[in-house]
Length: 259
Ligand code: NAP
Image (cartoon, rainbow, N blue to C red; front, top):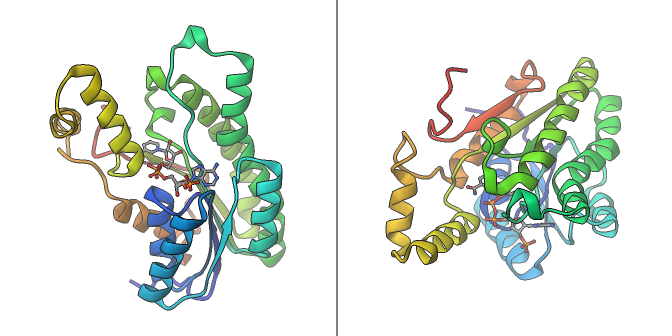
């Protein structure tokens, strides 16, 4: 299927690995020029080279922490006028509700709410002027079904979700759509680290830990970055112009809800 976005310029944040990389790959496959970001230059350059080789598109890299003001300024400078924005960053650490301080909340809000909002504030006006744009924010399944030990994430992502719900409806008339993708458990480095922690806590192997998580997922496995990226590319396609302010859950059926 031709997604109709060949030649569009896409900024994908936090994209050297995992879900962000999946999005960068599938947008490159659709013919987009990619501006990709991560903090570590090594993995970023390696990922960019692989994407250039595989899809023959231009790939620009920006090694910076997108959650800091300086990092964002560098990312926005390299990005220039983009048609597609995919926001992403690492998630806040797990913990216990009674231990979180104001500073912990401010850090989580900065990373997972105020950073995507700052990127949208900078880039959506240009999209509106040009009459076309797509924004996809990578949030989490925890927006629909809270994960108690990830309270910092639950809180910051809920704030972003509320912002998107209102803003998406203000910009849609100008050809710009904003939607959120909610990952459940996907096979990325972050998931491997979580499984390692379960294994250590329970005195079992990492493989056993993984299988115990799979047992809770109706699909019986983790999602892949490829599946996630393809959904992102569809939301960025010409065909997705009527999808506005939605929260699309990719969780293998893990959230037990009718709608
Ligand atoms: P991942 O495999 O650990 O990859 C994270 C990517 O983001 C890496 O390329 C990393 O590169 C980059 N990154 C992290 N922090 C950054 C920052 N401050 N500035 C720029 N780049 C940054 O993680 P993932 O599994 O793809 O997760 C992506 C997001 O989805 C996270 O917010 C996570 O909480 C959320 N999520 C994931 C799952 C899952 O099962 N995988 C489930 C629910 C929610 P550098 O380290 O070099 O910067």
